[in-house]
Picture (cartoon, rainbow, N blue to C red):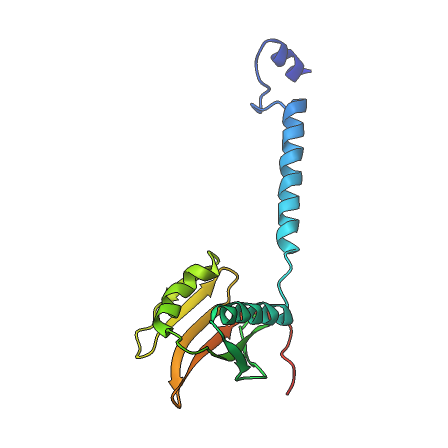
Length: 172
């Protein structure tokens, strides 16, 4: 009764806060949105090891497709796996691509990041005797591209490190 009397006089109740229907609705809305946001964070699905492996192989194929006249050979048919430390694993996948005649390795490496799209960022340009570049993909995959001369021929060595994926690696 005191709060009604004080409100009619234009004064706030002793607590200094009056729960109007608008404030009640706002409070309920904020609590509901906070609960939904927290539930959404808890429900974020982490990719499986198989999914990150398939994604990395797709990136390697995308790079191999950029090699003029390239023929892909898989150097490591069974990827190696390492523990990420949180119950997830990453895989190391290596491919070799043999380019067609007249291939310019340095020009290929220089142009590759721009041809792959904005999801690929140059991590570093490796200063070694052969053209090479390290790329980071926005999804967490790391890719190394190196042009090598082996036995008088040229091979583009592609090395992919997957993002961490849920699941145990297959037993060998």
